Length: 606
Image (cartoon, rainbow, N blue to C red; front, top):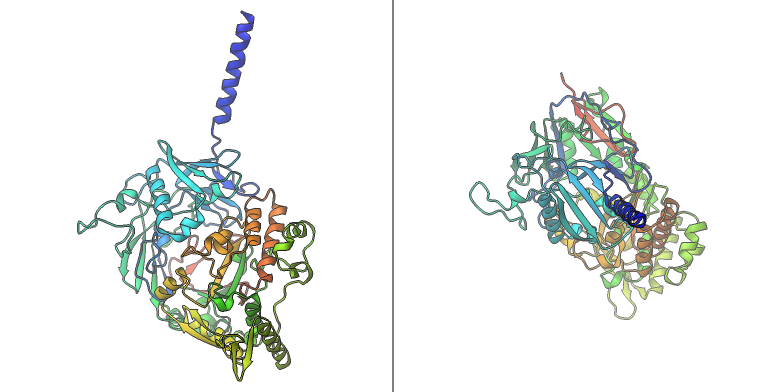
């Protein structure tokens, strides 16, 4: 009898242990690395003004045009600001690099091996028409985005299934274990209303999520689309009935009664509209304009405030570059790509056009602790030595440095070096033309741009390569054509920007991985398919600790640079903003951003 009781007791303990092990641990947020800064009972984000008035209109500008408000598909040009109408499962804090907190989801749970993640939806979460946000909406959103968007298809390629796992619960399954970033990034995508998209419009026509549309789409977020003038203006209005307005993650945010975007033909026209007071806020991307054209009365008398803010770059590494498309035969040889870098005289351009206000980019993670420099050592060196036969030998012997120009002698030396590299690659100067030594084919390419404002920075490069017989031409197209051509990799050279976080992960495969090289719509603009890069990306994704992650990122950065995949351009390292005194910001900015427009608000009484 005692033995039977002992066996029964042991069985009970075992069953209880299994039940405990299977019991989900619900969390109020996630941190990919380290711990969350805010406790479960936090009242607000630390950088907001909870007393900010809900008032005023924010008028913004954009360049180009738009013909679509459907964010799902890879067609058309989506209007700016459409994200204002959508909520996501989780929401990031600009005070943290790695932290994200519940928005549509009140809690999140995942096992130790991170093979799945489960979100529990808030019971009060509602669409703009009052219908509840359901697990079916989340499943529909993930499946639809992956099916119709090249970006989401690539970014969420490790999501193998999504299921309703409870009345208000939805679970994502992954094809990899111990990928620390996967549970976090599936909280980032916009949740779409399944019932709305499967319904009919006001004319009784069946909606089709696979087509462009200018019908005001519906979301669960703080704003709704109030008015659309196709290609010209889109206006959003704050929803008084927004379900999440009192959540701690939202307090002190979404303060403007309306936000509108007006489109302009080019940046100069947009700037004049700002000067005239029809635009309230402007982010200035031209160093020369910032240095020379903000001297009008409204700036002098304080009605317009100028600020150069470094906050967004504390956690953002930037590579801005001209990108040769290696899907074109002429750019497959690294010596050709390196020669083009020698032909770019940044120093003279910076002096003449930007009044010395720019800095040359020399890393794919420029400005952060992830940027490589000097020669590899320690853990980074050990990682690279494992790939010694697969990476350029100079990663071990020669620190990466961009050519330096700025005076006639240096420029001549750089062009001479460019000609030498081209000769090694099979090109030669015949008369005043650079041609293929075997075929006689001229070295000729087109630089595709989507803004006339970029031309002034590219023109000096075009003039420089012409000195060594290269026929480079600029072609500036409208935003719709530019998007279509870049999605299909129909270009020789483009101007591209990659912004990197301090927690690089799965998106690196989208930027440089072999599996993205042929997938239309990916951001592998250069056409990189390198086994060493693929190996390093996986090392970054499955890193055991922060020290190893930093070493792996630096190693990848070094290999990317050594292969001369891009012609690095420049950046200022500051976000230059100017705004009329009708609007203002909280006194304290977040550590890693400026909180715009979420935490800004209208000055009442002006």
